[in-house]
Image 1 (cartoon, rainbow, N blue to C red):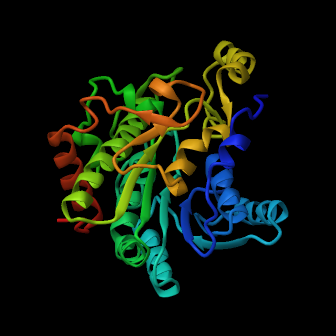
Image 2: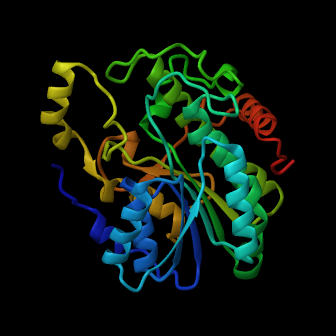
Length: 327
């Protein structure tokens, strides 16, 4: 098992966040759990958005045990159901006058070629479309925080997968109501249709961030849009996959040597969420999109911030979610 090497010294560079509200998706394990714990340790209120499951109760118990005086609020939110996302956003608007940070952390990887109830690919709706919707629904609360206190954050969590789309570009078919008709269930180590769909969602996360940062800047908003990647982070994201006897065995042996812990993997996410130096329109993670290391700026590839990709993502995401975001 990998050992945490950098996180604890990194955490010393983070400020107190007393009284600030952080909304984080996907906190039952991995980087989201680490982010929620850290928010509470530093005095913030961690609002945890997850779909209903027994894991939510276990998560709350574990977080409260780690931070006995921490403030944790759980709100049901199924990212594979737009109506559930809207309901969660409504609850947030009724509960809070403003929020400091929306951390779009939740994600699934290399899952079967299936449609959500809304008709979209499960990975695209979970990893991008519902986060686009949540961002649109909560932007007024973020803007209010930024106007009152000079700063608020939207943080999207991408991955190394954003650099591995077959054609180095977003493809519109993955954003439509094509769930269940996007290549089938082929999966192999960093390949196959299941991974190709995942790569599209992770590229969508970074493209969304660059477009969002530009649009916020053009409106003189004080809200920052930041992106992160966790490198090779040892979480349960791939626990469901069967790569065959050889690759499963090899990954068990080499995984700890190649990957960093969820704590080290959460550094980019947390830098975007609360570090004073985190800049809008920047992606933080291990250098040169590496597997391990400190969270540093990663310059965008040309296909991550080109105008055509941003325009396509915006159009299709607004059509899917029936919202207008920074029009």
